[in-house]
Image 1 (tube, rainbow, N blue to C red):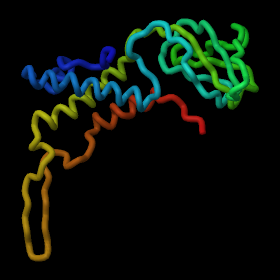
Image 2 (image 1 turned 90 degrees about the horizontal axis):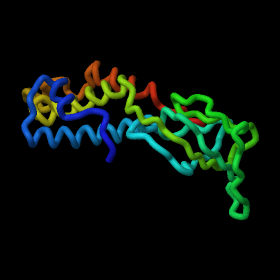
Image 3 (image 1 turned 180 degrees about the vertical axis):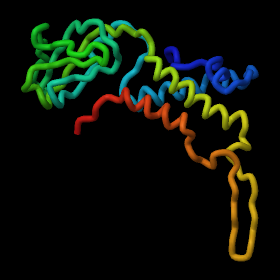
Image 4 (image 1 turned 90 degrees about the vertical axis):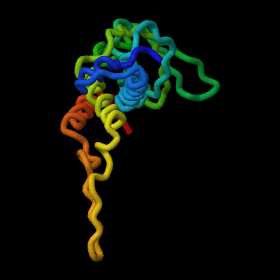
Length: 196
């Protein structure tokens, strides 16, 4: 897997602790999982860069949203109607415009809705934006906090009365903290639009 959006050292710094070797290995696994979650939730990736060849998309509107961003150049765009007997048609540079290089949006001529597009391009791969790295820090630290202090999510006390049971939970009792909610909102700001 390419480089995650946070590191065990950043997670430890966020938590204000020093991790043991075993905890650091677990933090690395958490960082990988959070990175995969962010990529899945946003529908894009900031892991690495380089040439991407024939990335396949279903064209719904006049825009194709590339999976990796930012994009420095689109080298080719080919379209196909989706029938088995048809051939791929390569669009010229005037027909396929890199409309938004920061977000990786290619603008196509109207009339290709329902077609497939194969796009070859070069992603700059400068790594994730600062807010995505910060969100990865917060989300990873939140997951590690439970691993480091398992009692923080458990029952603090249980009392049994007549026809009544009361359980008081330690910590947040399953509630997301304000920082976790803010981190998820930061991730959501980078989500690709869903066109149904």
